[in-house]
Length: 286
Image 1 (cartoon, helix red, strand yellow):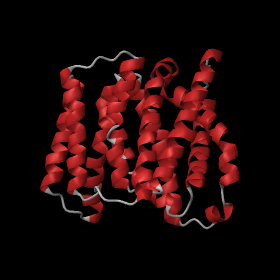
Image 2: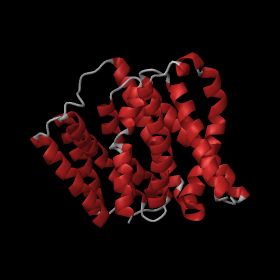
Image 3: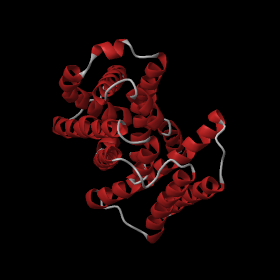
Image 4: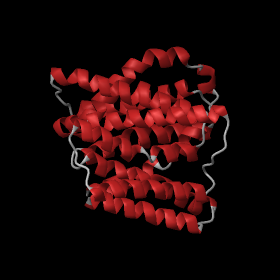
């Protein structure tokens, strides 16, 4: 069941880079974050109202810290980086998530490093590189602005890894909806004053239909459904075994481009996709 949930999570997350880049074409990172997490927090608030969760007082501060890492830190860095870099570069950098998750889980949760698990993580990352290079989605040449965007995305990956691993005990204690909902609502409350001051409301009023659709994807699918799926799986499996599934996202994005836009599937894509799948299986067995 965990495998199916994480495959669904990867399929949803594959569209996040494209939706975020599209929304950032009309809005600033502050505005996208305000709408995205303001509305997703309302959704989580409704879920928590229907199924109340009693959080111990000692855990509220920890969940507040997780919320700050998830929204002002992780998503602030992600959206700012996406405004300057490309979806391909962001996907490549997020393919490093299993590496950072494993390192954090090794220190915080004591997860063990078997040869098969390490080989699987390395193989899956190499497969992502082959897929993205084959599609021409990444390159070694870029402006200093793009390099700064890549650095921000890399810092966002580190922040997400900390959020994922540190939240595992609370997901086990309060459930995926309870832990994720409380953390995101608290994190949004911290971000709200900044977002309200930095937002140009006239731009929101002039947002196109496609822009609103992109925001809707980020709100409902990425920030509610995908977050719940991730923490549900995290409460039932090792953090590194859950994180490795994120490397399927570039492969699924390429398949989406093939199905919708008729983009050609090349030999590097087939080889890289096979490497990613083999890496996921190897990590799971390890």
